[in-house]
Length: 337
Image 1 (cartoon, rainbow, N blue to C red):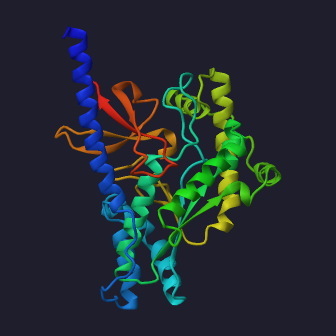
Image 2 (image 1 turned 60 degrees about the vertical axis):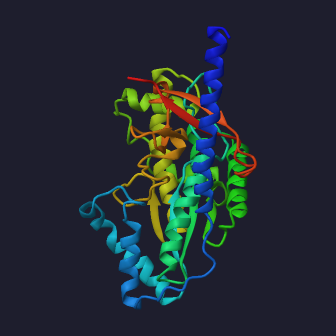
């Protein structure tokens, strides 16, 4: 066997071993996705439930903030939990998940993606885990709405609604397939709010950001969500548009948010909720992939146009294990050094 053939054989064996390891990881993920049918745990006293919900919600599994930093969000969570408790209803949570697509990890070489994948599977797993923990002491449980602001995607980056609605259809199908409809639904911006609504609301905010200076990081962010390179003029214009449209979107969506509003990254008014284990970033900014840490243990990481060059990526398919809605799972091997 020649040197080239030996290298190819070795590479093939490595990929086979990778596939086996990935499959074992995904099997464990899928096994933990299903909600338990019943709970035999004793109920808490009613006055203790809201505080226990906040304690679980701010556990490190779901929240990256320190205990001191989460204190400012406590009153809102306690109020929502207390209201649900009085009505013996699920505690409502609204969780922002982006505009209905994933940004390109290689703008100009790779288009934006409208697939559901490992990222969405992790989001469902995180919510399922949280819901299961709350049901142990509050049988009415929780109800999450995944908020998709696809009108923002249209008005900021010219992403057609038909594309983002296709993503929403697949996301809803994945929720049904995982038997999680009892704790999860999808709130799609374009199903409630029109372009005319935005035009009326934006008239109140246009022109406030004209003196802003664009950073390189902001420019790169525009390109990843467009899926292509652009010049400074276009990047600046779309960034200004982003600020105006997002402000209008928040105003228009506010009447539909009737519970705890959460985001993947904490803001002044919204508590964070990790979209995947260890996550503190927005899944719509790229692709969630699996890689290894220094101890060779698999863990998820967000691949974006900022860190894509640090990895060699290989895609694997697991049609017998994962939903047919998920086309592939990516393993990202860090470059040495």
